[in-house]
Length: 394
Image (cartoon, rainbow, N blue to C red; front, side):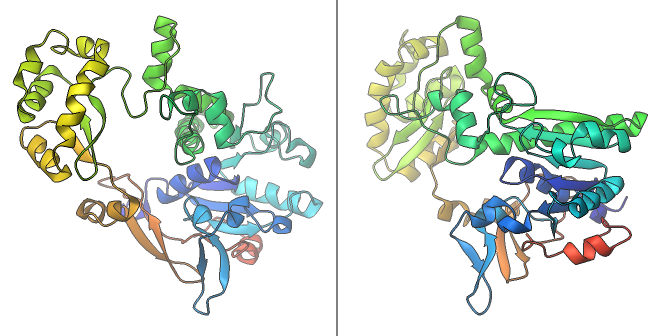
């Protein structure tokens, strides 16, 4: 396989999902070379996120397109087909497309596609090798399966909001739709595993994935902290539940992050702030001791760090190999040499004009990701796809 073809070249994805979790998954599959056809409802103007703006992309005359920044964040490398799946004609077209597809992904409420004959039970009879991924708020089973689910609700129900925010403040969501994004990542992994099984056996299957389940899965150490101890974790702001010091500290002109992962690094930090005696203090000599005396240690560290400017702290600690870093705003992020070197900002030519997007972080040495199609306006490919003998052909 040539490097330019991508590892998923030839894989065909029929995307009935919208918002963020499903589109995150299908964009990733598309970046890896899969051909993705996105089905959008013409009656509503397509994917809901087309209306989640501003900002929007405008054409050369200043006319606003339906390419919101939100939509573009998860919808490159796809063709857009405007199709009414509630009609008999639309259902027939979906089945025709499914007959060519390896994967179908949808995020309707459980049972929502059954009335159209597009549910897994129906399609699997006709297309037994189809990998069918269903994403919903609470999954296909359980007492909450019929409830709708959005990212914020998943963050609340799944517990991450109880761990996020100022200790004295209100529960706080993560600043982006991380429950959706991580659900999309899990969906990608599940789909690739199901494809492997299909390739070995010829047998498709359904992947049942819930926003809440995936959010609970990435509680990681805090979730297992609770399951091990029975103690409900408390919000610590930017502090770490198992490592001290591991936090954001104010400097004379901003903030820095200190991530001191072992006792050797802690000793170097103490030397840097001219307090070498702290490393031998029984309250602070080991990480378990520092956890027990977190407040006492921070009462010493915070004023010491605040007396120094940000660059002095970063340069000084980097020189002695203590993990340290800045807290950057997005204008700073996207103007760093690191972002340029890693190609984490890309430009593509969309129908209204050039669009700037976030790059894919995967770097495969033999089969790199490709950026073939900019995020499409709604229905841009309807005629071409529906009239093609091979609708997934690039």
